Image 1: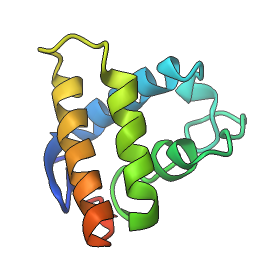
Image 2 (image 1 turned 180 degrees about the vertical axis):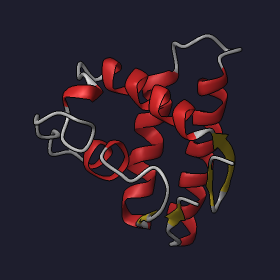
Image 3 (image 1 turned 45 degrees about the horizontal axis):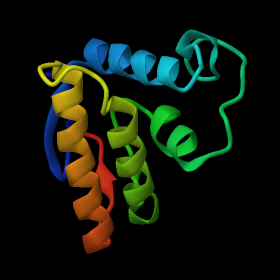
Length: 112
């Protein structure tokens, strides 16, 4: 049980994915708990990564292919300095590969 993706072997438990997004938010200078949709009132920055990945349901929906490459690039950039044996980093890189494939194939990345 947990979060899977249509075009990737990346997998997190729901609580693990929430912790992962808290780490990503911190890398962006944000506190996830203060953001809209996560218990807070702060609006999300108006960029593709925040609007279409960070502020995305963690149990359903999809990311349209036109956003996939930009999100993949940002994921890789945010985790590049995390330790190589970090679980979240390995999952993020698998997810980035899947997102890139979606962009190349013109297919949406589904959260399932």
